[in-house]
Length: 308
Ligand SMILES: *Cc1c(COP(=O)(O)O)cnc(C)c1O
Image (tube, rainbow, N blue to C red; front, side, top):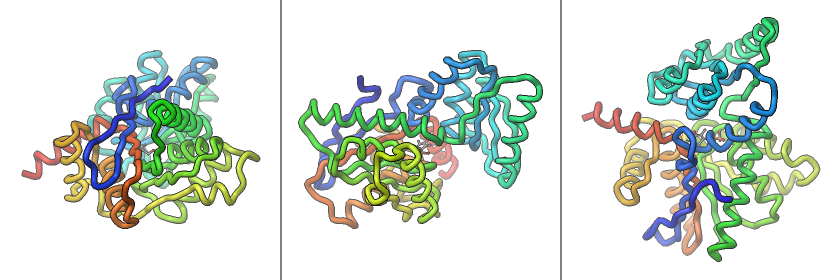
């Protein structure tokens, strides 16, 4: 069963563009974090846990989704957040509404604080479930292997083949899952991750490690290296307040009714447009994965108004 729809976007610069609307996944404003958290929740519900601990910034989609899921289950949700980056956003406001306990800590002390909070909980007789920031790890990867299988199902039904898949890459888990899906299926196509923050080679290495960890013996190092394309040209300066990103966001909502944001999907969309131009890609079928972040669209709108 497909969890999110794939829709064609008509009239797109010499290629056929399709978009997989992960932002429409039916839980807590959707997004790739909703898909990943779905799998973590199966583990939480099957176990004997009385609280969940995770990590993320004030604008984190991941933390919003986890906090919402915990709220429904009446499970305590503890979020470790780097204080240097803590800002008031619609996501942070929702984390508060969902009753999450937010522990702010300096960026350099995040892993220490996580370790200490976990061990304090255990000492107090609690049973915490830990989710790495952004849902990083094999469970998160698996969620996007399943997404890849949905894409294949769509291709079979519709008789199309996507030559390229583009997406916003952060911790790289989403991209790693798609790459694993591709390796398992033996398909030849390019999956292009547009980095939203990390630089090469470190950002790419993390994806390679995630793929290796998930695939084990099932894929050779050469296959993994060849399958991992990580574009880091649109990180610094391409975030909030960047005019090109704002233009891409405006175009998408005005021409297609699709909301993007200026932290993830807007950057990735603009990066994809640039990549298509630079590599002179024409007459291809291209799939853009809309990884979500709908509340961030409203933060973007609010900032646009403040600029005027
Ligand atoms: C977290 C996030 C990403 C990045 O996903 P990773 O799996 O961490 O690479 C992309 N887009 C949105 C909207 C996100 O919230």
